[in-house]
Length: 323
Image (cartoon, rainbow, N blue to C red; front, side, top):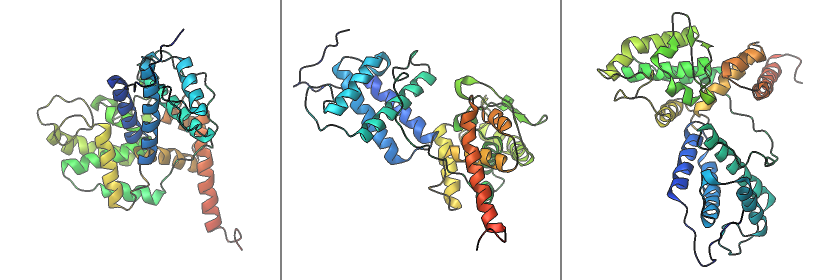
């Protein structure tokens, strides 16, 4: 298919919908994945450059095809990435790899949100990179964080229940804010989060998390909700459903109180949940089920983390482990 390209003296403008999709994607990365500001800014720059390229072709993100993505990456290498015919410095292989990763992540997000039927980056070779291990809190750090949410006022009760359930059940941020009151069965000791692709799973609720949730439901949530017909389990101070952004602020506030700012994201509690279970002897398949991982290889990442923790404890505790 022939692609119409704008004259070189015309600066193509990114379509407003493309910018809206990028902003939504960046919010997801910040509040659910906990990515750093500099990473978010790099993704924003990369995607807006891609948006300019598509605009020159008269296309938006959801209409792009594999050839559009491939042409954009090829133009990066020769120094013509904006679709305006102007020459720019060629990008290094490392920069092209980063931009490829940004595009793949962006289109996976659009696919998850069911905004596209086919992913134009699906057949691209992923950039080679080392697998970064997620940050995990120690048992002592988790205890400090959970106990920072103390008190009997409705907000304190909500925060304690939220943190206890996220750590005690390995919830994603989206799963925590998406919980309905009816998803929590304290009598049977289970919670039913809805994971990626709206897939439901059953996760046990431990004693501490159950106690915190019970106090919140009995003495905290009714005061926050008032007469509103709100079905979500976790609500804000106005009684409306809690957002990802609101959850992120709650976690950051309590992390700062106990000196863990800079180490925390909503996913940190989930990582800690998985690692602590494996360190305590839980089998890999059970952890996979509780996390809602489709592929056990994703869960296997935590076996390395728990192994490192065991090794650290060994060298500290064994009398003949060190000289």
